[in-house]
Amino acid sequence: MGRMSGKVALVTGAASGIGRACAEVLAREGAIVVLTDVQAGEEVAAGIRVAGGKASFHKHDVTDEARWNTIVAGIAKDHGRLDVLVNNAGIAVAGLVTDLTLEQWRHQMAVNVDGVFLGVKCSLPLMRKSGGGSIINISSIAGLRGAAGLSAYCASKGSVRLFTKSVALECAAMGDGIRCNSIHPGIIETPIWGQVVPGSNEPLDLDAMSAARVPLKRKGMPEDIANAVLFLASAESSYMTGEEMVVDGGMTVGTPQ
Image 1 (tube, helix red, strand yellow):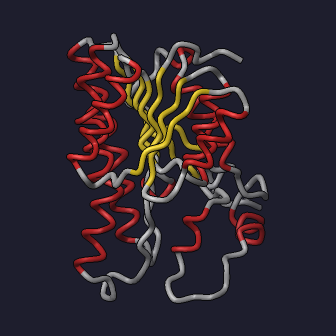
Image 2 (tube, one colour):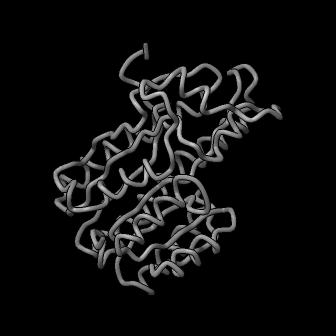
Image 3 (tube, helix red, strand yellow):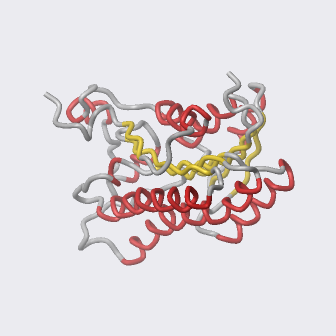
């Protein structure tokens, strides 16, 4: 307890799944957490407060630069600092390349790439005034390797990976005390899997998929990613920047026996 005491954290896509778990874990460790999402998330913030944490929720479309500026200005006014940014908000647009529309492609990039870019761009000035901090961009193992039917998603998450490394080098060169790392989840039980098979009324069987594809033979949970976020947000990872932390039960290591 208390690993994030005195810190202020902003978590996007925090109404459910990985974002919610990140907000809850950071708050449990003492951070003041600002949750944002396009979906309703006040209930999550209220739950954190009931548990003794400090949290607020704000409606937020991460593709809207003006809204980003408003959110960050509000954090500066209410808390005077920003120490941690978790760019978690994301969507999955599936489909064969020949079936994807340009609108679908652009929407995928707008949320997963533009949203991360805007988060970093708009948050950096306040983080610098705060004396440093940690930026954590949630990518995917789809940002490390290709997947048939997920070309747009893979392209977006690969962009997040390399954008993270470039930001890390810029911040290091400036000596501003800000670190930037990416996390690459594998099969994690979150609502995003409902988007992966368009037009299907059958939910994906993540347990069966994990048994076949994951060396550890099980799916991950949002808390598995949240714990990685906590590590990267804390001083325990002070010598890490520009790195990619893979949390996938061994999926990218090799083929399970």
